[in-house]
Amino acid sequence: MPEQRKIIHVDADSFYASVETRENPQLAGKPLAVGGRADRRGVIATANYEARKFGVHSAMASARAMALCPSLLIVPPHFELYRTVSAQFHDIFRDFTDLIEPLSLDEAYLDVSDCEQFQGSATLVAAEIRRRVRQELDLTVSAGIAPNKFLAKVASDWEKPDGMFTIAPDQVAQFVVDLPVNKINGVGRVTAEKLRRMGVVSCGDLQGVELTALVKRFGKYGQRLFDVARGIDKRRVQPSRVRKSISVERTYNEDIVAMPAMESALDELLVELAGRFLKIADRYFPTKRVIKIKYSDFTQTTLEETLGDSGEPWNDPQRFHRLVATAWPRGAKPVRLLGAGLRLQPRGEGDLDQLSLFEDQLEPAV
Ligand code: DCP
Ligand code: MG
Image (tube, rainbow, N blue to C red; front, side, top):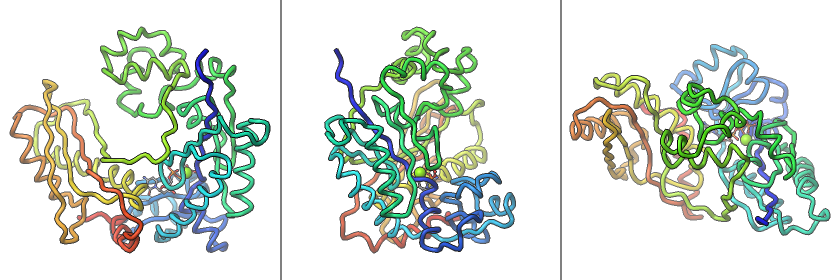
């Protein structure tokens, strides 16, 4: 019989915004975002749930957020504080297990299979973690409890904010049948659309597609789709995961054939990359810019450049444009996929002063 794990996925609710509200209680109940200034081309890092009702969300231009919600308050981020709070979350987690895998400052997987408290009930452990976070840190976290990482992460979103949801082993089969495929981590707009065209909307539909067909259509990811559709995910909780790079990429419905279109596609990717990077900027700094191009005939090329140490912003669009302009002629064919990324180096404990640098990055270089 396969080994049964008990995984909890914990995710703080509107994390930066909640911390700011805790520090400054008169912000409570008002639409609030944390981010860069609208008049300086800033972007939103996160918004509280009041602001989300107006359509405000992470990675949105602050100017657009103000247009959607004129009463929105935008406060600047305090990364050192978020990092401290994150360490405090982990102090609480460690009272239950050492098997903790952080995904970002406010998100982590916990493997509590060997935890003996609460007669081994992962649901009761999660409830206790939530209670302690509320009591000791005056913040709320949501939790998902399930036999694996994939389901735990879906579950933590199920009753968000300030909620928890358990998927017991004997409920998995039932749960996945109706689960929309876009809830699968990694299934973005493009993949969801491809699946829809195959008649697949839910994981139940996905179960009806043969493995060979999925692998043919999606490559290695096909196997992953096959497994998660059945609620299977064998990935272990890996305590101290070290990242080496971060990237975003997009496949275009129509191939890109001209440089101006390429540049605006790249600019969009950079906004997304900035959002992703900001979530881990306290722990890593970028060392290289990377671009990836896949041509219409599926051949591909990548090019990277080392970041100068002159304090230049990593997300300088001009530098990314130049990289693409250099790499593209290698193939001189229409482009179907474009990727932008960063090679990363973990920060040492002594690098904290550099954090103030990242406050600027909420205002992308023009
Ligand atoms: N973040 C960011 N840029 C993004 C996404 C997130 O700077 N594009 C930061 C701000 C968030 C924090 O990371 O507060 C955690 O991200 P989450 O995706 O968990 O979002 P929240 O915690 O804000 O909200 P939720 O309640 O949906 O978890
Ligand atoms: Mg969160």
